[in-house]
Image (cartoon, rainbow, N blue to C red; front, side, top):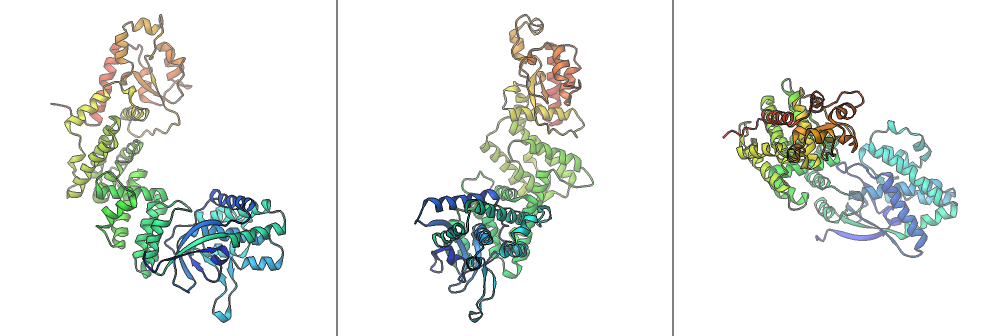
Length: 562
């Protein structure tokens, strides 16, 4: 490593001293430790304190941009620990009654100032600007009673909620575990003299970021998006950094933290057009950043427009005076598929051609057909990635919104029809359910939503036919029963759990007591159709199967003509 990078182990009494003046830069994520993580930290510390009389406790590492012999320390990694430790020390101080001990403990939270050394009085840790005043006026001034009386609904953000909850939690744990003044002081001695952090420092921000990316394996789990953000924002000129940090955070608020990480994964696919082989950070640098080295361009021209497209696709939120309802309905069904491999394709297309609602409608309908085919026909991840990569190549090269590669080939369409016309009950539940609910939607005006907590696919003709039953009398040919039992025509969706006894009811009883539900009316058109059939015979199933397969061919536009 560079000779400018140094690392040393410090007791907390040194970490929270005049040697360090911590500032959380604006591009860092908010304070995010919950009561679970803060409570676990205290429990680990207290358990160690009780059982280890002499050993030291290692709290991990922090990464700082800091010049030698100057206290100002920009925190690149470690703000979650430093903030939580500050809260813990403040909670401890608030419980100590002895003035001398209390004042000494308070100096680990607030720099008292040294006029003849030019050191001003100030908090030792300055949070991000959005939370700095709240933290300084509550935790860092020991106003725990005020914190307890604050209505969480009035707080500005989740970071402040976490600060309040953790402060009250840690104060409560200290009060319960350390029942007298001397016990509090003894624990404070342990905390400040036997608990250590490694501070890795560099005067160079770029060097600190490199350390950040390889050393950070503790604290709140980092997502690759955090590292990409730190790298990008860190390269921007200081006078513009706050502006671009605000832009990034606005995107993160819209997408959610996990959503932003997903988005960067999809952007990687848009650029690489191959299955990921290594970690996202590495591949994002290889495929995206190498083509867009300027961080301002990355944020303004790639992440912003792609995030807009991602939110439209994920949230079914296309807006236009024409076609919006139909587009969002198709997106709704895409989101019902059990993988997100289609999303890079939708994002790429919407970002490039999204203002043309006619083109978007045509493309999204065809994309849903392709995604449904791959899903229902059990294409594996390699097959899906390869197929979607073809579409991404076509979008990238095309100046026209008419992207041919999203269409099914005749062979693909024929295979799709063969699967639909086969024993679909043998498909996995997610594939089978998608097909049957999609078919049910084809029978409605398209506005139906399927959000039932329970979905059961039931056989009309039961899987097991009892001897001498009505089913046995009406379906004496075992081979004929086997031909139809698991095919589309014999399957209906229900919003109740399967009843094994009711499954073998005769047809009339099954319709009234089982398929119709409590009201006698089904919420599914497919099931209502069965209720309207007077008998359930091979001839009825033959007709129904042909109608349903033809419906799929028509609505999905499956051209299987020779």
